[in-house]
Length: 393
Image 1 (cartoon, one colour):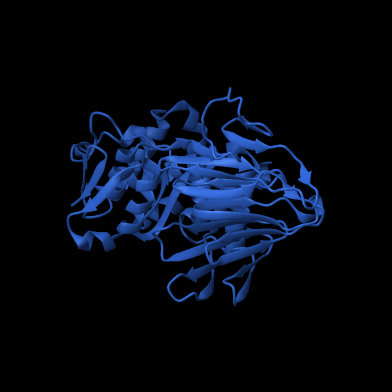
Image 2 (tube, one colour):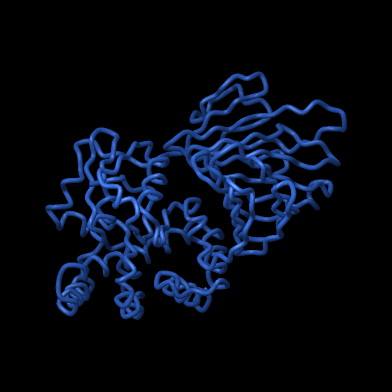
C-alpha cells in the first residue's frame, strides 16, 4: 500500500492545487469509491489544507506558518489527525502556495476565532440533509422510507439506508409495474434496481423505474427531475439487454457504465457527465458519444447538445462522496445548491452579489452556518439567517 498511497497523496495535492490531469482525477475518483475510509482520508487532507489557509488569511504569512508548525509540534491538534498532519508536512509548501484558490473546509479548532463570524450562528443551527425518500408503489400508495420494520415492501428490502429490489426478470407479455422514488429537499437516497443497477439520488429528485425488467427487452428508467448518479449493471449480466435512461427530451443508452445526470426543473440545461464506460446521448434527432471525463450539455431552449472535457471530474460527482465542490461558481448557483440540501429559502438584497464567485471544497455534513462562514471569509459578502431563510447582503 505504501508506494500506491504515496501516489494518491501526490494526486490529492495536485487536485487541491488545481493542477491534476484528467487521468489523475479519474484515478482519485476511482480510489474514493474503493473503500469508505478513503473518503475520510481525503477529508483529512482537505482539513489540513483548510487549516493552513485559515491561518494564513488575516496575518503575516511567516508568522502564521510558524504558528501552524508550532501547533503541530506541540500536539495541540486532535490526536486522530496527528500522523496525517506530520505526513502532510512535506506537502506544506505546496498547500501554502495555493491559498489564493480559496479551498476551505470546516475545522472546529479554528471556527471560533472571529467574532464577526458568530453573527451567522443562530440558536438552532440548520442541519444538513439526511437519507430519506418517499416510495410510491404499484397501487399508488406512498411509503415514507426511514424505518427498518416496514412490512409493506414486498419484493424489496429497506436496509442500511438504501432500497434493494430482489433480482428477478419478467417474461415477455408480463405486465410491467412501476415504482417512483421521490427525494425531498434536504434528502438523498440510494436504490438498487432488480437488475443490480445502483442509483444515488440527490435532493429534490425523482426517478421512475420498473419493479422488474422483462428479459430480452431494453431496461428503461426515467429520471423525471433532479440529479442522479448511475452505476449500471452490465448487459452481459442481464441477458444482454441494453439500459436506457430518459430525462425529458434526452435519452441515454448504456451497456455498463457510471455517469451522473443533473436535470433540475429550474435549470435551462441537462448536464450528463461520464465517469466510466461509454454512453450515447440523444435529443431525439442528434446523437453524441461520450468518453470518460466528458460532459454533454443539452440546452433546453434550443435543443442543442455540446460536448466538453471535464478535467476536474470530482467536482461533478462530489455530492455523492459527501462534499460540495464549487469552482469559480457564482453565488446564485451556490445558494440554489445549498437550498436543496438544507431545505432553506434564500434571497439576495443586492443583485450584484449573485454573480460573485467562490471556489471551495465543503463538507455536506456540516451545518449551513459553518459553510456560510467559510464562504464569507473569501468574499465581500455577508449572510443573515432568519428562521429557514438565508439573506445575502
